[in-house]
Length: 339
Image 1 (tube, rainbow, N blue to C red):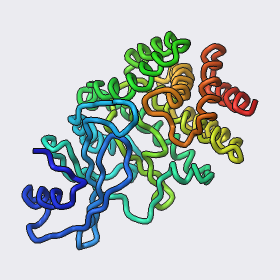
Image 2 (cartoon, helix red, strand yellow; image 1 turned 60 degrees about the vertical axis):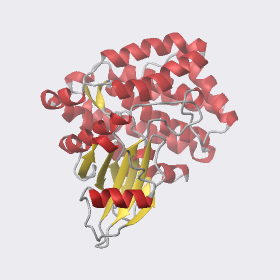
Image 3 (cartoon, helix red, strand yellow; image 1 turned 45 degrees about the vertical axis):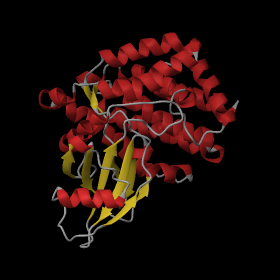
């Protein structure tokens, strides 16, 4: 029987029975606001140390029906084991244990006080240093994983969860809802399946980053796979651009931040042999994600209906008149949103 980690009585019984904690220990549990695909609970021990427990859901918490095998927790656990080899120091929490039968894992909690970066950004709090860290962190993951490909690729070559949690809900589903984009999205799906050159996070977003003592800590690794670095770039650029769309008073700052992010990443990676073609594919993935976050299975919750319609129209224009570079894309998006 699978334990419900959001039920404190069941969770305490499980932790004691599995000897994860002492038989007489009674920690404090608190449900965390997580993403749509996991149950997440903070456990605070009497000695002051804290864990985060995550349990993968078979049905995601979104309006549309969206299912995924909870066995994907093994991908997240492997990512916690291996990402410290390729990410900057202190950006990945420590894995404490994994229980595949219960579809859960535990990791060290990021100490308090910390902030969710998405919430900071939605409050208009942009910090250039954090933006450059965002670019440098991703460049490290992509670049170093390529050099360690013989060690990493066998562990992360299974792309099942990238298919079910990204390509299907973002690109295939959107192609069915927006027929005029179907051909573009079909070609992009094939490109993401073809260009498998680095470790790809697959959910590289401000919502999956905590800010602790002025540095970024990256979370949520259930779709980590060997793939196209252009997907991570398109996915993450979409979040900066969409927030700039939503926050009109801070729009110029978000557009500038998107440029800084891209230029930081590019300066760290453009000399690498695997970088060829990444910018072009990043443009395509950004356009596709801008559209998918209005019309896919997981639309951005902070965009109003009017903003979603506007962003959809701009994304369709960008498909018809595709910019050649990331800076040109950012400029065109900003201009079209203002129009």
